[in-house]
Image (tube, rainbow, N blue to C red):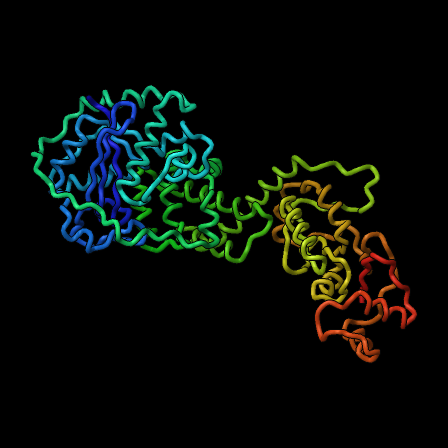
Length: 512
């Protein structure tokens, strides 16, 4: 009776012409994917074992393992008459075909099913399509990931879920007919000899998870569908999945970059297709970066490093970030509320404007920063000519940001007014305007030598922070050398100098 042979290989690297298989597992199933037999062994690659931190296999583990040449007869017996299955099948089958060639045999072209490619049909809503992602989406346990047997068992169970008519998606007729087609394939007549298999040690080093970092965090739930939407060829998604896995440790070495070039040939991708795939991938990453409204230094450095290794110049990073901002602004602009007829706050904020915070209760500030980012504003750590507004409670009018806001005539608002501005944020006026926000300073809506906050006016204090501190110390009032001046100190100074006292709750800032 025919069926499927589910295969997984662990290898010394990514390139079939250079790297070798170090572990293989074959699981036999019936025509609907039910497991009937399983087999696995380590393989001596006649050289270095590659990245032990990924597959957990050491040189000592494979020293007494059979060579692939010794396995050809056993492999033939397990694969002949069955349709082949693997997750990212071109990778696994490419290595099998090359190992057959090294042993002096030709592996025939067989009907096969790639559970990664098939996931677009059976699991269309997934972002990433690693084996772990597909298993999670279908409730399948994945034990001993990155071991050939563990991954093959999970892939076989995933295959069974695809072919189950009660799983929610009707099995594709082409997939159901694969075992019948496989029975007509002629395999080379290799004698089958007994093989002393070498099982994986249960006490060996476990694979090391990717280091947490800006890039690995972005990749964790990166949607490859987004890369396709941004121009990557649909035929390149399996290649991009491997690219994402290679990048998960936050480093793309020159050797890995060269390996990816060879992988592109494995997936029959032209130079133009690879370039489009890389740009779509980079643009999808850029969308992830700007989702929270800001780009951290680490995120920008990761993008620059990734772009350089993929063959792009530094300018592409700015281009894709700008493009991602435009797309995000346009999408968010569809949901903007119209301004009320009695709008009291002058020029509204627009998506893409920059905003900075100084002072304010920590909890309130964190809440407002989150709302600003969610609305499409850029939250910055400093005030510059590009900053649209500074949000402050006015408790310390001499912070660095407050001084800069006065220098650049940046609009200053209270937390209460800012909350209203965010609630009624408006779309960027034009696409060109959105792009300009990344390179030019926004023009203040109501430039004035004295910034008005919360619609309350009062006379400015004609003294600097140091002058107020010196006066306070002369009066015996508690005051620090630096940091925020207490509102009581500022009020006392104003009274002592015959200045108008600000109403309670007012956050008027001095302008000199």
